[in-house]
Image (spheres, rainbow, N blue to C red):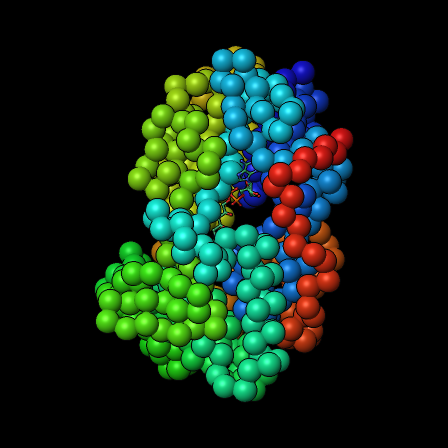
Length: 393
Ligand SMILES: Cc1cc2nc3c(=O)[nH]c(=O)nc-3n(C[C@H](O)[C@H](O)[C@H](O)COP(=O)(O)OP(=O)(O)OC[C@H]3O[C@@H](n4cnc5c(N)ncnc54)[C@H](O)[C@@H]3O)c2cc1C
């Protein structure tokens, strides 16, 4: 039996498990630093208070039971490529094939003290924390809630639109601004799309400051070149980088994502694959992560039969920026979408790939407006067990 070890239970990690778990020749071990799988595309909905975090979390232990694999909760910090083992806490986990599917995390470009005074939208815990802070402010503050969002990419835009809508539904005034260093928000997307989104966002009363650099983030204050913006909440969505485990690889992109060869492998190692956002080959998106999973699962099967593998090539299916008020703007298979269809498509895809029938049901009710906008304060404490380790078999 071959040992397959997957680090990261995100979209690519899950995809590989689901393709291989029925094959009796493989024993799969899935390692994740969190005891639950969390669903990133819905982070802006959770952070903005619209959706309970419970809807986007699914216990790793339950997942492992369902897909007959072993699960280890703990952060993989070292890999011994010679001995072919991953070190998680005090455990050595041997592998025949290893998949690095660790995704990305917020990057502060070396200004790590920003982290102390700004929230990110890159983990379930952070989204819960933003939601709690927002609700607290809404309950105590008479004046408008002031929110500075640094970074005008998908995440910043979606969060801004949702949070404004949420506050409006609760008759709470806001003063929201998006601060973007580039000349336009959604930098890199076609002009027609950036224009549409810019018009929509500004028509909602959200201020967009483009070509503006944030020099410092202090407590309750975003410092720009010529002014300081007092803010009740500061959100940092200005960049992503590879996680610590990337440091084990020789060739990295400037943002720390791992460079791969034509067969999604790195360091010249035949048995180590890099999947999803951890690799720098494609844009960070769910469809790409899923295509890595399909390819790597098939490659592992072929290699274990001693057969050669073909190069990896993924297709870009497009993207949708989901805005509050039922509008989704983007491109699907090269066709521009703008309106309710795009919005519903985004959430339909979320329902399809969300883990757990109960979670799917809750999300459908939420999208159709059958549940209250605020799905209740988080009932569970934040589960950040990165220093702890547990094993589920
Ligand atoms: C706010 C936000 C909104 C998004 N919206 C969309 C969207 O609408 N549509 C879309 O297509 N894409 C969206 N994306 C991008 C999409 O979520 C990612 O491309 C996708 O999650 C990548 O999957 P992955 O498997 O590579 O990594 P991830 O899904 O990020 O999973 C990585 C996993 O690895 C674990 N991990 C990391 N390091 C370690 C370690 N050392 N040891 C153990 N475990 C570790 C993490 O806990 C995590 O569970 C969004 C991303 C964000 C942040």
